[in-house]
Image (cartoon, rainbow, N blue to C red; front, side):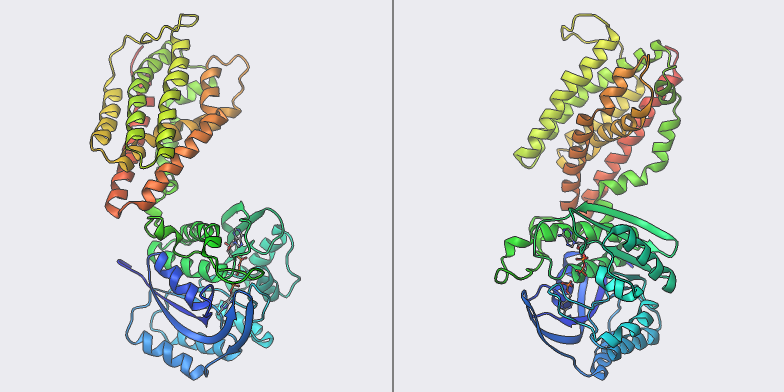
Length: 496
Ligand SMILES: Nc1ncnc2c1ncn2[C@@H]1O[C@H](COP(=O)(O)OP(=O)(O)O)[C@@H](O)[C@H]1O
Ligand SMILES: Cc1ncc(COP(=O)(O)O)c(N)n1
């Protein structure tokens, strides 16, 4: 599918705008889709609860669906409240009649957050027929319990077992949601018949504004799957988006105290972000350079550095080049600080530049001139190697273009690849290891948190950037990664 996905919500109306098709349309739009809705039921509802449900005849539901499908391309379907067994059977029959079935996300709505029933008890059995036609089912814990005919899971292990049973029974993916657990965590897991294919574990957000979380998540998931064609990534993006909409929810101030307020569906958009995209996630860039990272682990220099067998002269040759590199890198971090869009980010890159000089370069000096006076003089006499010069030229070009987002993406690998290597080498025995101090510096928790922050600022820039700009960020990131690899590899290729 190219362009804007057309996403159909088959669900009930919530006049308060927090759940049902109102939440679906808002979520679909915020996630980059064109939203449509066929109504299964009308509710009289507020943040305090549901006072009445009115269901139109199922023949009319079928007519809505047929009229729409005869005209509009449907790239994904989200199914929410159905209300009765007759509505479930109507939707199942419509799906079966389609010449080609689009991806289907089924949120098996049974009970509202307020505790009110939204599905006839006798319809629960009929739901199994529809589950078998879905690609992903997203029950909350009470709905899951009803579907597997067991008590509601109170711990996550039990929930995962129940979910796997449901996934195996219908050969579908099931998104287990931890919103109804007690405790400080809010885990979710996307589970197939063979077990979890993606797991998530985040802190619970302290708020009662959770009316419509399930509706919003499932619509976001359908939309993002239509764009990305990858369930684990669509889930990841949808969850991250929903979480931020929950975090910002209380600002909407909808409804009297004591109820459940809605999520802030427009929060990310109003903060200047584009709809969620895998391409704009640094974690996706990192995933996509997995082969390069494996190659880096195999570099002779890295292996000998890890086991301590590296010839000191070769280590010194590496440090000489690295000291040259770091001097220039610190100036480029300062440039990122100048270009940063606000003072918090500017302060981060300025501090990173300072630490680069005072900590990393100082460490190099201590190796190159052990016991020598740290008089600030250059620890190296060497000229830049071809590899060092090429890497720096790439970074300089990014800086000269004056595009903050592209520059930070280019600067990121020098944090991330070192931090990743440092964390993995943290388990190496330090007993008499000649390079222990070097290993410690990059395995240090302070360096890990600086790296996490550098990733977060880059992510913020990417999420706000146009597709073209994201492509330039990603290219700058990947090119820097290739230069990192060449940089590590160079010392093995030359005789010190
Ligand atoms: N307080 C919260 N903090 C963070 N995430 C939450 C919170 N409540 C629900 N979620 C998330 O919202 C989504 C919907 O979950 P849940 O509330 O279990 O479903 P439902 O709305 O269908 O009852 C899940 O991704 C869940 O982890
Ligand atoms: C029309 C309609 N559909 C679904 C829900 C479930 O909402 P929640 O996500 O809060 O469980 C609802 N309250 N109203």
